[in-house]
Image: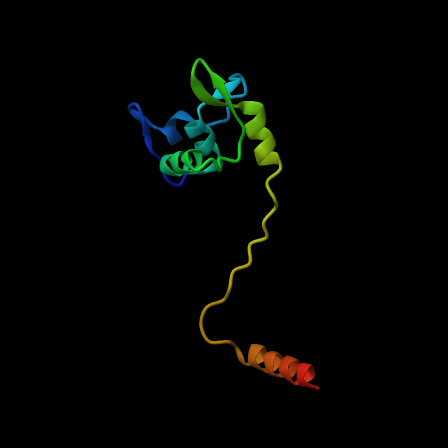
Length: 107
C-alpha cells in the first residue's frame, strides 16, 4: 500500500497502519499523511508552510487530525484519469493523422 515507509519508534509506519482504524477519533498528522501516501518530511513541510490540507485540532497541546476530517478529505479528492504519453517515434498512422489535422487547420 505504501511505497516508502518511515520510522516511528521501532516499526515503519507502513507496518503500523495496515488498515484504516475507525475506532480512533484522532491521529497524528504524520499518520494522516501516511494514509494519504505522503512521506513524513512532506507532512512536516506542509505543516510548517501552513498548507496542510486536512484541518488540525489541538488536543493536550498536540496538533491532531480528526479521522472524520481525513475521510472527508480523501472522499473529496478529484478523480484522475491516467494518460500515459507514448515515448519514441510516432507511427505512420499518427504522422498521417497529425499532418491531416494541420492541413485542415490551415484551411
